Image (cartoon, rainbow, N blue to C red):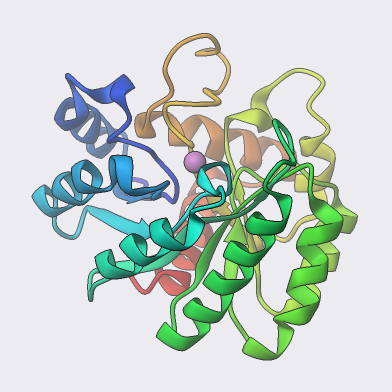
Length: 257
Ligand code: NI
């Protein structure tokens, strides 16, 4: 039986793939990665991403959203452009959330934009793909305020503890996206992944970022998903087939693929 994987977060319209995105999709397919979900950042990359996804129906899927790092004083203008781009093919709002790592200058606007997009997701009946960095308490505060909406989703590039995962379960069947970081020496993520149920894990690369060992320092790409799946299997003491089946079923269900 050949393994089938889904990469739930890959930026294939990034300039890192300017010359070979089609080849990266082909290498992914050869590695068993039969579906790839493309996250949105802001209007600067959106047209290219949508065009790329359109070339690969039933293989590449797109999300639409305003990334926290792209939020500033004029976020409402960017938000309007994002909303215009949402169509029947849109599988989620993402990546959206909070990021105070580089700057807290637009903290207030980030919170407004995140909250707005949670409400929009509820209105549209779409799941969300969360980007969260150095803003855990504010994130959970907004999750509390939005809990009545019943929105589902996942935290992408999850790097939190098992306790943070448990806290997330308060809001329903939320998933966590696990990628190359899991393979890094000294990564604490392995401790959390051991305890997080397999059914709550989605695979992702976050290409071109965060490549798994032995590709550190290189460009990441969806074809490396099996490396992450193998690491999860090793940590949990199960077969990679089981990881492939469970993560593919979870991604298919959450994003209605
Ligand atoms: Ni991303």
